[in-house]
Length: 115
Length: 195
Image (tube, rainbow over all chains, first blue to last red; front, side, top):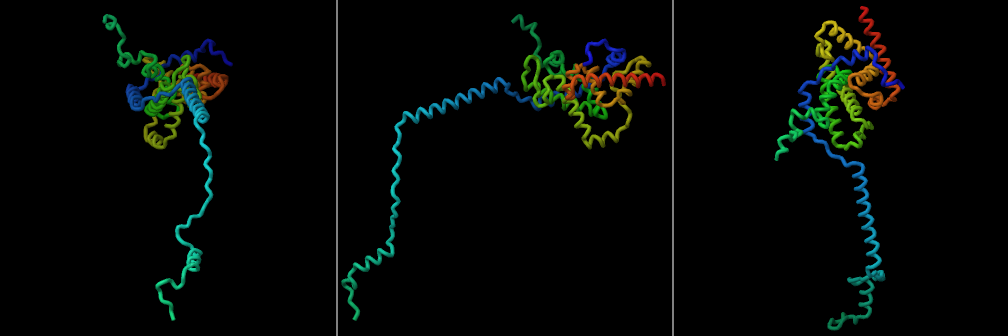
C-alpha cells in the first residue's frame, strides 16, 4: 500500500492551496428547515434491544411456568362421559300411526257403523 | 446565581451553533465546501450540487442522530459504512447521481448556458488565477473514478481507508487511483504550461 505519510509533492501542495467555494447561506437554511420538519426517529441501540428481548423472553417463560403449576394444583375435572346418541322424535312417525290404528277400536265408539 | 453570568449560552444560539462540533452547522461549515466540490462532479451546476449536498446532509444527520456512536464511531447500517465522514461522502455521491439521472433537470441544464462555473476561490494574482482555471479544466478532464478519489483526498481530507469505504474498494486501489490522478493532472498541466 502507498504510504500515506509520504511528503506531498509540489502538485499536491498546490492543489491543497486551492480553496473550494463555500455553499450558499441558503443551503444551511434549507437543511435547517428539513431537519426541523422531519426530526430523526431515535432508534434503540443493540444493547437496548437485547435487554428488551431478554425481558420479553423472561415474561413469556414466567407465564408458561404459571400455566404448568396451575394445571398441577387445580382439581382436575373427570372427563365427560359421552352420552349415547338417542334419537328423540317429537313428532309421531308412520309406525306410531299404524300401531295406534291397529290397537284402536274401529269404528270408534259413538260413530255408527255403516250398513 | 453568580455562575450563571459565565454560563455558556444555550446551544441553539445561532452564533454558537457553528462552533459546536457535535452540531450539524459545524459539520456543514467544516465539510460543506469539499462536499460541494465533490457533488459538482456529477451535477452540471452549483445549484444542483447544493441540492445534492442538502439531500445527503439531511439523510446523514438523521442517521447519525438516530444511532448512538460507540467509541466515536457511528454505524450507518443502511450503507454498511462505519465512518461518519465516509458515510457523508457516500450519501453525497448517491444524491448527486440521482439528481443527474433526473430528466427534468437534464432538460433544464440543456437550456442553460454552457459557461463553466468556478469551483475554487479566485486569486487576486492574475497568474495564479490563470493557473486555477487551468487546474479546474484539467480536473474536469480526469476520468471520474480518479477525480473523485483526488477530491476526497485533497480537499475532503479523507484517508485512503475512508475513500475505500465510500467507493467499496480496497485502500490499495484507492491509493493507486490517487497516484494515477496526480500523474495525469501533472501531465495535463505541463501541456497547458507549454502552450
